[in-house]
Amino acid sequence: MTAPPPDHTDRTDQDPPRTEAGSPQIDEPPSAVWDRRYAAHPLSRQEAWLSGWQHRLPGVRRALDIGCGDGWETAALLELGVDVTGIDISAEALARCRRQSPRARHLLADVRTMPMLRDGEFDLAVAQLSLHYFDREDTRRALCEIARVLAPDGKLIGCVNAEDDWHYGAPDDASSWALTPVDGVAKQFFTRAKLEEVLSACFEIEHLDKRTLSRYGKPKSVWEFFCRRKRDHGEADPLPSPAIGP
Ligand SMILES: C[S@@+](CC[C@H](N)C(=O)[O-])C[C@H]1O[C@@H](n2cnc3c(N)ncnc32)[C@H](O)[C@@H]1O
Image (cartoon, rainbow, N blue to C red):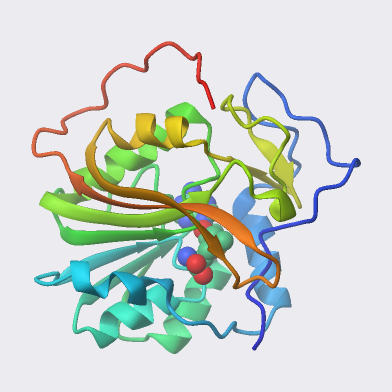
């Protein structure tokens, strides 16, 4: 089995320090880093993570795969007879997704702003490991943009780095919203409290639990969630005060 492009590193003392002000020092735009990672790795082979959620997806006809990467979730959704749009900031990722799932629609887009997508266009949004690159404000922005393109009652399924994702760059203390640079990309590590706060602005959380993924070779700790768009999600509420506990 070929490993997917790594989004990880073992934690080392050489990791640059985090900055409380927000973004750590990163030299390149993330799209360039992802393009390079994808170009350097053969197409991964993995079981679509979504398969464990199929029982919660009856009636889904139109889905958005956010940060589609190689497109394993896109392919799994197409097999279920769902129309799929895959978005990614990496042109290289989209080319790979297109190669294995030519029937999907592929768009170069950033999840934080998707003006090319209509309000209520999708029944389902899938975000596997693609929403943990932002500070607090941008995470909320991304989630509310996803809510905008979901139909009333539309579902969001995803997973993000957990605070104890030690093999892949988690800092000693992830209770603040500071980003951590890992292999040239700024990453967010979520505590339950942080994730609940941002999800609940636009979604009803039906499931939120920790899980260990084994796809990268070493155990990867993630929070997995299943949510429904709030009927009256509107604009995001103003951000509450920044004190966040573990
Ligand atoms: C860890 S990979 C996961 C890929 C795929 N979902 C999977 O599980 O195999 C993260 C993906 O998110 C994409 N990504 C990062 N930031 C993004 C953003 N702001 N908007 C859309 N996609 C983004 C990256 O280009 C990359 O393809």
